[in-house]
Image 1: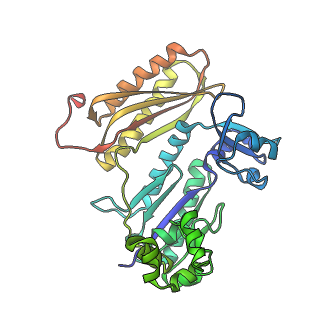
Image 2: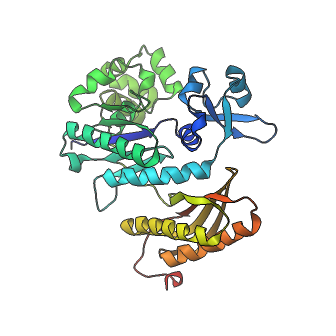
Image 3: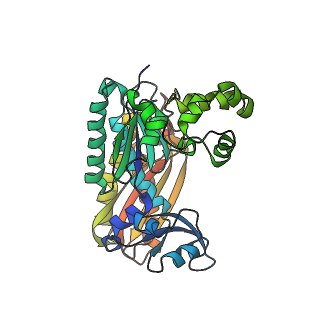
Length: 365
């Protein structure tokens, strides 16, 4: 069956969020690091913006090496919880554009900053309409989160994923079924999504250097070298064939909201109304998908831009706003008793999500 699949990949996600939070970083090389704590720059680069990439800084590189390549770069620690809260909001935007199905398989988040969504029904297999939807998604993310993304559109996940990297950053690429060969075949075989360095090396030893070479290679030879499953997959992928479905994530998923207070404060009368609104938004999203939660996490960012999180796990799944607010307020009281710096932003997030059962838990009465 013909499909229309869209892949959204956020542009240099962690660094872009830091630029958004601190506009003074824009135009500078920004490097986000996983720091070990042994010394100031002991650790590895998690990601960086495009200014830093021009200095040949790459993910996985030691931060000390990155410092030598770009002495004036700004080095920041990873704030995973904060980035996750932004990701949660973006994923809800993307989910709203996906086809609606009873089994929920029209959306698949594959990392904190990228996801697939199927829009076959919404487009009626019209790739020009899919292009319009892709642009609308880009516009909404830009307006609501002040971030850019790159979009790939194709007849399956394989093509959509590869297409999204063609015009990064902030681009959109459509590969309709009639363009599969012209899109795929000129590319190096190492560019085929799902092929690692070892497989690419073996293919090159077999005289296969481009995806066209792979598409035209004898499938029996591929099967004898890579095994039946892998060999057949290589042959099909080179032709742009991919029937893999979109798969909804399981219980590790989270839904959260975070917002800035009207002013930096420790006044509970100013903080609780915002917490109430955020909890309402979270419960609304849970309700639309008939989900319950077991973990409640509250995030605070203080006036010094330091972020802190605390979580509580419930004994039973719940899905009422009252339960969420009660637990979130308890956590917030703990923060207030410990903090001397005023709060700038507050967030609430729920985790260990699962489909609701017909019976309420005691927490919901």
